[in-house]
Amino acid sequence: MLKLYNSFNNLIEEADLNKREVKIYLCGPTVQSSPHLGHGRSAVVFDFLVRYLKYLEYKVTFVRNITDIDDKIIEKSLEENISYKELGTRVYKEFHSAYEELNCIKPDSEPKATEFIDEITKYIEILIEKQFAYVTKSGVYYDISKFDDYLLLSGRKKDDVISGTRVEIEEDKKSPEDFALWKLSKENEPFWESPWGNGRPGWHIECSSMIEAILGKTIDIHCGGNDLIFPHHENEIAQSRGAYPKEEFVKYWLHNGMLNLSGKKMSKSEGNIKLLNDYLAEFNGQVLRFFFLKSQYRSPQEFSIELLEESESTLNNLIEFTKGVNPEPKNQKVLSIFEDSLNEDLNTPKMLGELFKLIKESETLEDTTLQDLKSSVKFVFNVLGFELIKKDINEDTREDLIKFFTKYDIKFEDIDQSVKEFMDKRESLRKKKDFASADKMRDSILEVGIRLEDGKDSGWSWKTS
Image (cartoon, rainbow, N blue to C red; front, side, top):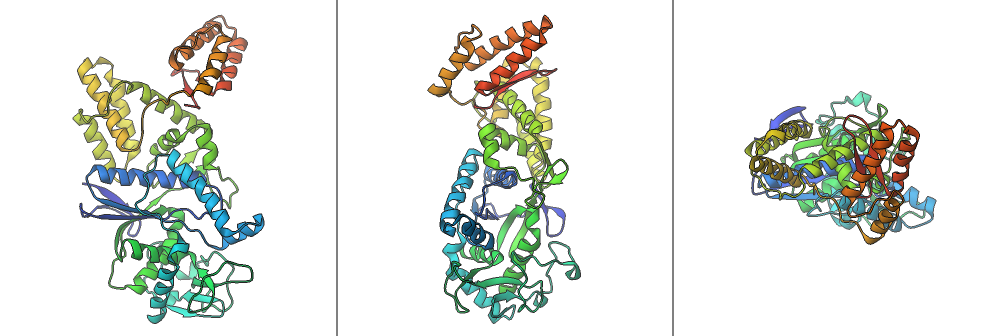
């Protein structure tokens, strides 16, 4: 039975889901700047969830939104002297490219906030009519004093709340913590018509509106980073429950943990953001995907180049172990490990630990049993979005490799054979204690994207694969 950690009550619960319809909404990107590693983690870990539910034969409807208008987008577009549309289109292409490289399933719907202005204004009208919102000279605001359950998700106290709006506090609000539903436009800002004047939607209202328009008033699972719990998801609850008090809105809230760099949360405020596409270019999507698999999704995850390199090496070993077999569910123990681990709130580290223990102990297995183990391991990793194959070498890369290995009197036939001969030559230098020449060989092969790893589990990995 699938169990999930519900952030609303901080409990692991048995997921009571309808096999015929599971509605999932993931808060997607705000397209004002390039995607960072945190965006990658959120996309991948909830991709694991969607894939696993489909494996369990649930019929999933998956929605991931795009915030294509907000204050930061406007500010950035003005800095670059381009339109908000031009900025948003360029940045979203970067996100789309990253999602593809990470092999994330395409959502059933990917709505943009600017495409749902009519639905947003109607939603605000409902909130005004039910006296959860009020109109001022600067816009329309949600009155949090009218919603008794405000802050139940985050567990904060109203006295401790710092305003969660994305702009400076407006003087005409009833309370500093009231948040914007509609912002009247200033000079040279993009705007849409509304009953309250030309303006644009607030950040939080777009999600409540799009969820209702696409999925209905109640959804099964709402996902996002735990940095969105307050104010974004807290305010979504206030809006949706205010508009439709008899509806549940969300059954299960799932939040992924943040990435840490040297013990600090990776964030813009810390100035330690790492751009996702830089690492995708250096390592590739399968390596980053495997890196995210190694931590439980709701826990913080430490990031470093060394940990990425370790993931790359382990993934290459896994590819080598499953080489030449088709992905088939033949080994019941592998399937049990997979399901038991994923049913435990998507416990992917547990799955990895137990599967690699089986692999380590597989040397004594008979050939048929070994092949079934390999096929099953490949199968469960395929379910989670891993191809476990080495990419073909394009002609330009082949020419570069031929030239490189020729310098060491190695005839290039394929990458495995050539690297093995190269490593044998280097090892002979090390045995002669000619470490300077051996190190020079190790450094030189980096020119073609191949990194050698010394030590007990020595091997190699190819970044351009």
